Length: 309
Image (cartoon, rainbow, N blue to C red; front, side, top):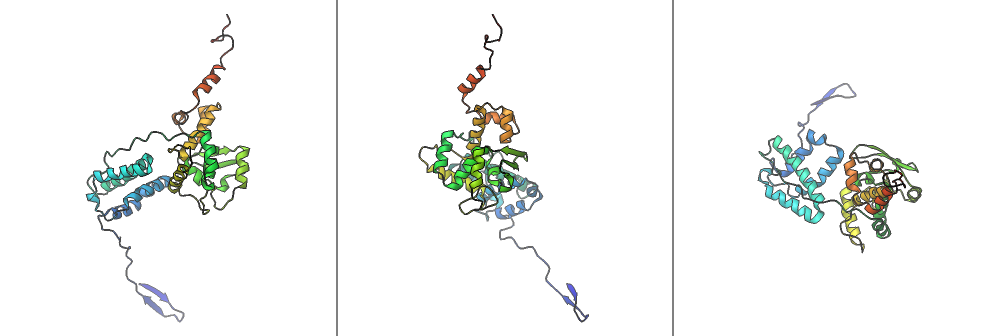
């Protein structure tokens, strides 16, 4: 009931029915209802924004049959989904599905939706490591890719950043000489000084969006959509391997830095890696012979130990 005093001083009462939350369009024990509850939970809210975005992409695979009763979902069902995702989108996507679904069903057990998780001991698939691009791969891709994808490859080769950070870079982060931003995954503040040729390119790019990279419609990229479309675009270019992805350009930049003589700490300062072991993993494709020759030239000229006879 709401009371309101009118202009003549009289008080009028207005009565309304009690507020009711909109009823779910799914059954109380359905998968759709579980997904809604999980995404409204404190545990979901407390996830990092990047994690919520990634989980949402893979939970979407479960939303295709939202009326299924949660208790009827079996480990076999989820293994079949994982394998189907692996065959169509790759082992990395299958791993993302396993992690997102495992988190949700573990939450469901804790909240007594189910007695045990059907994702229990469902393993990720061995995916190996994404292929490292070569300088030739970069040149060919830049020549043949449509502009939105060519811009992304160019910026990835110039900065060595992850996909999420590349697509999130704003024009406000560019001051004409460097990029200043905070990495999404590590929360590490970054300052990347750009080569003059990179600045010259950026200075003449169109700026239809607040982000430096945008799709054909001038809108910021959705990361998963970008990856899928880039893969298709690369697949149309003759002579390129079929396992190239944007993350391989990051490994290309780390490799190029290593071949130029940069230390692992210097490379980590560019890529934003927190551990040296990851930098070493990324630079496995370094030209061993060239580095060995460079190392041997550091030895004293008077014998291998530097001692005179």
